[in-house]
Length: 203
Image 1: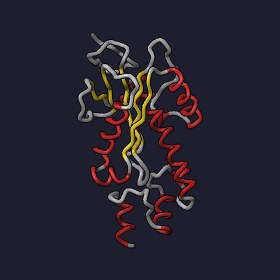
Image 2: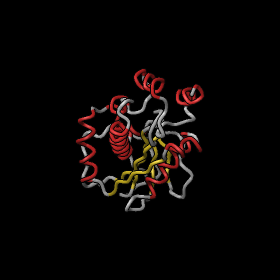
Image 3: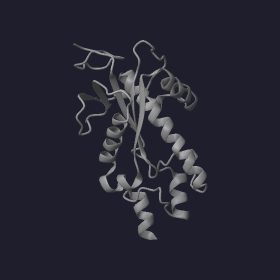
């Protein structure tokens, strides 16, 4: 019993309640890591799904709304900066994914996760390397996670206007590092990440 989706590797599942999971925000120096879980409706396919990083912001926004309208279930999970610093970014990402799947209004029968490992959970599932490019449900989750996190960073940009969060989304760009050096770290910065830790040690 095999389901194939966008040229994905074979997975031992054939049914409707297949959840795709992906995260956004492992690399940034600030803000939550955000995960999304999506169960698509096979009777209402969505054209244009792809890895969120390969789509324009405008296209992501259009697909974000379409996924919410047409999917059987969509949910978000987060791990905040305190949890990231306590657990490390890998395990915080796993926690966010776990929370996303737990938050689905429909319990999935099988869960596919982008990457090479699964969170520690009771769900039957499989990790799929480059899954955001190969499986539509993971592509949908990558879009939901990316747009949600970008919107989170717009909120941070309003709260901390000197840091340029709208532009770099918290990633360690030259602009962000210059703002850190000039203004110091905020309570939304990840204190265990080297560029932030360096600023804190200097302070």
